[in-house]
Image (cartoon, rainbow, N blue to C red; front, side):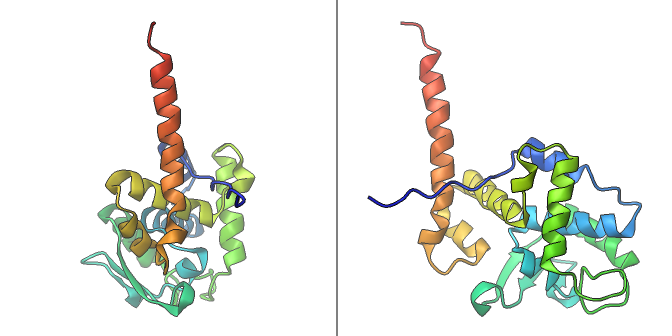
Length: 193
């Protein structure tokens, strides 16, 4: 019998909101960081994909985002919500001269290590349980789980995440199965004999 994979940490809706609420958007870097976190939560981007976005990859009118050469050197198309687009438009007004959508203050490309540290730091500030386990990949897992809960369609989740093989995406069905088990066992336990 194969070894069972440990389920990834995902954020609840209230934890996602707590995380988002930590950003003080009066500061340029905080607004930039909020935009990156929202893209990871709302589009399931990997850390490397977020820092590689160029302004021309995002069509502000339609919300269409082309992820160039994601994992496996494959492009994929995603859509960004109006709410996130509004924040990004705000960021673009303060954006330093750079070919990157989310550059450092001097215009160079951010490092994924910065993104990992930033997400963990804000999760800790939000007092999210196990903040040391919250990473950009946690936000990706959260997006995928929420999309699967909403649609029930694993192929949509696979396409959004850019997974070549659906078996990689199947972990999100196990997360929802675990939640269903918990709900059903407590539901049955509430009955009187």
